[in-house]
Image (tube, one colour):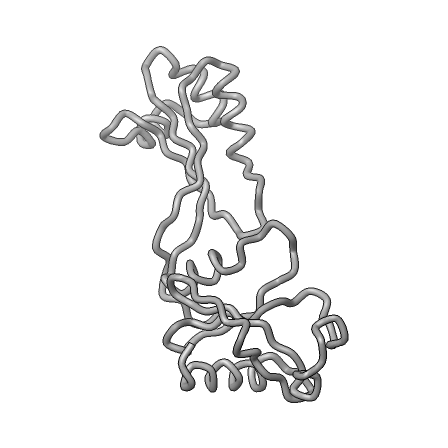
Length: 177
């Protein structure tokens, strides 16, 4: 991380997150990622203390800052979450979403209508040029369940070929949420 970006990181840390004391990004903790850096930080007054003696905050972790310095966020502390992945998705205006791809066949028309709770005309409008029905649902960073799983299970139990996967797509311009 260059000096200019280091200064921006400290600016973000001290002006955007509402701390009452001055904070500092620890220079030797910078880790470079594809579209951002992540850095440890602490109170300026505790900079020379061992990590074990510094103030700890519950629920927040490292500072993530875009390589251009225009956006920054603090990582959460929820285990198992790739915070950098989600931050970089935001930087690129990308989001994860659930996609249930169902192979359509006339033989399964009744089963599909029943499982998807729709009429024949509604069902036929859903079929794309590849003879598939594709249902989607947004996926939040902390959402590991979708109602599409129930439909997937019902379709599998009915012997209808389908696949539930997580995909990525562009979002509307991200205005700093």
